[in-house]
Image 1 (cartoon, rainbow, N blue to C red):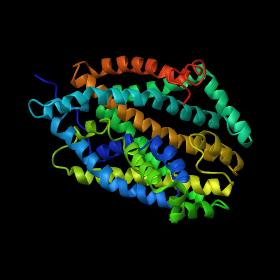
Image 2 (tube, one colour; image 1 turned 60 degrees about the vertical axis):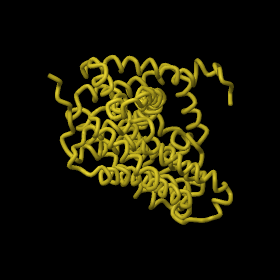
Image 3 (cartoon, rainbow, N blue to C red; image 1 turned 135 degrees about the vertical axis):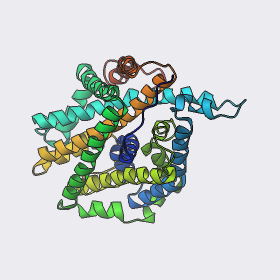
Length: 379
C-alpha cells in the first residue's frame, strides 16, 4: 500500500511557504538595485504590469500542474502528458535547475548569515567608510575556509528543517521566519522614511518620470522589468509546482496565486522603501549592483545612530528571506527523491545535504582559490 502523501496543515502555511519560495534575494537584493538602474518609479510600474500579465497566469499554471499530478515537477509532466508526447523530458531538467540555483544561492545565504553574526559581535559595525567595509567584504571572499563554513551552515539549516517533515519542519519553521521577516521589514522601512535627507530617494522611487525611459531605452527597461517578474517569483524551473501538490481542490489557485504575488510584491516594494531613502540620506547611488547589500548598506548603517542595531535587524531580515527560499527549494528537491526514487525523507536529506555541500564548493572557491580558472573567458 502506497504511503499517504504529506499535506500542509493550513491555508496560511501554503501561502507563507509558497511566498517564502518566491521571496528571497530577488526581492531585497536584485529589485532595489535594478530599480535604481532603470529609473525608479517608472520601472516599478512596468514591473507591476508584468507581474499581472505574465507572473500571475504562469504561477497559476505551475500550481495547477502540482495539484493535478500530486507530484513535483520531476515526475508531474509524465503523469499528466497526453500519450505519445514528450513533455516529461522537461522534468529532470527542471530539477537540475533547482540544484544549479542552490549551488550559488547557498553561498550568498552564507554571506548574509556571516554578516548577521559579525554585526552581533560588533566586528562589522566597527568598519568605518566605504573603503574599510569594501576591504571587509573582499577579505571574506578571499577566505575559502570562512566561505565554506557559512555555506555549510546554510545547507545544514535547510536540510535539518526539511528532515523534520513537511508540517513539523518546513511549514512550521517557514511560518515563523516569514512572520518575523514581515515585522522586520516594516520596522526597517519606517526607520528609513524618517531619515533626514531621504525625501529625494523617496521621490525617485515613487514619482514616475519618462526621462528615465529615454535615458535607458524602452527595450532595456521593459526587458529588465519582465526578467525581474520571473526571477522574483521563482518561475520557470518548477520550484512552485510542489506547493500546488500540497493544496486541496476546494481552494482557488488563482486566488491563492494572487495572495502569494501580493505578499512577494509587498516585500519587494518595502525593500525599496528601506534602501532608496537611506541611500539618498547619505549621498550614495542605489544602483551599485551586488555591492549594494554587502558594501553600500553596511557603510550606511555604520554612519547611522544605532547603526549596529539596524545592521543586525537588516541582515537578520535578509537571512530569513534567503533561508525561506533555500528551505522551499530543498523541499522540492527532497520531494523528487521521495516520489521518484522512493527513498525515505531522512535518507534523501542526508544524501542531498552532502551533495549540495560538494556542488556549492566550486562557487565558493571561484572567489578565491579557483578565481584564475576561467574556461569560458573573463567576459
